[in-house]
Length: 538
Image 1: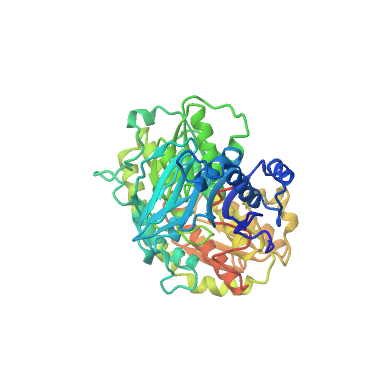
Image 2: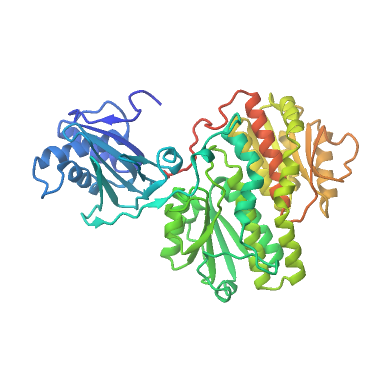
């Protein structure tokens, strides 16, 4: 990052200023043309190219704009030549009091306040000023002039704005006495889980209910395969959901990186139901995967947290997370709510098939008890903080789990590397012998998930392999587990619980461990380097 490449960018004639989120893919061709027209550049950015392209069309147009604002029309004409993604806002010195903004595959929201309008890519930036917003759609422009605004398309068609209301308050977007948003959001998880499941169980308490699927139970039952697409943390949640659906419903599930799906030519069963998972509902790769699935004729449901987001609008149906705003870049409460909703989808599918009424009741009771189990896990925070201090100086970590806790090992490794910049990897514990064990040494701690159950002894065996090579071991074990003396250097206990809830509860210690290690190292927890909350460019 340099000062020359920082936004806003100004056109070489000094008339236009532009801020831009996205990628102009054909900027080099446009730049070559503009150079031939004597436009000059101070940066290497595609944004400055677009700014000068707007200036070019404005100069070419003069006062002739077919009764429209020449400022608006110059932006519109420039965007017709652009390939790529953008969320932009432009100013013009010759049109004071006006802003022209537009979007394509990059989020843009218009806030409608008291005698003011605001533009942002995320609602959390607006809620302190207004809760009334207009979610712009792809190919739409908004022209703000004085106390009025108008929305139109690239083809000059007028659009009647739909003003939505943000359903959460500014207090939810403040730290409320915590040191970081991430800390606050970790401790909000019991309430977030309660909100995510509220009103979503049947009257007899034996299954889940979702109001927005837009599929009858009969239609849902006829799907014989499920495909989940997501990125990053949400992809880990999908892996857990895969395990639970296959375990309880006996329906095959495939999980794919959204960023890879549309570039593969995967053979897909025509009776496949797609799910896309994205907290923001604006993740560009997930949005593209959804559009590709719909293009091929598949039904697509979404799990996301933002009403009015692109994915929420374009999906055939879906499930809102209802966990409130998540400000910290590293996802916490959004992830555990995705785990919860995935477990509820697994329950719903299972009860449509061969899960018994009694097993369904047990499953529902387990889910209802999840918030209290998470509170008990959060009570371990002081102990985890002390453990974190002892390990904050290490530069390599391994996270190891099996079955539904293997994705939590991946998530633990991701959290640690995201916010503390420590190299960390997640593996199935049994895979240690197939290569990763070469990393084990006195300077590489291993975090093991060691729950009760049929694989407990297998986990213990893997831990012994690490200790035999003098690797430090942190064990996250369910209460009542009897680890051999001296096997683990540190033990964090979590409540013993139902298989559907275990991944949620097991997530809490690795969130806290990562958070406290990052704080100990002096890292900017809420704004880790090189990362954005919503990945809106490919």
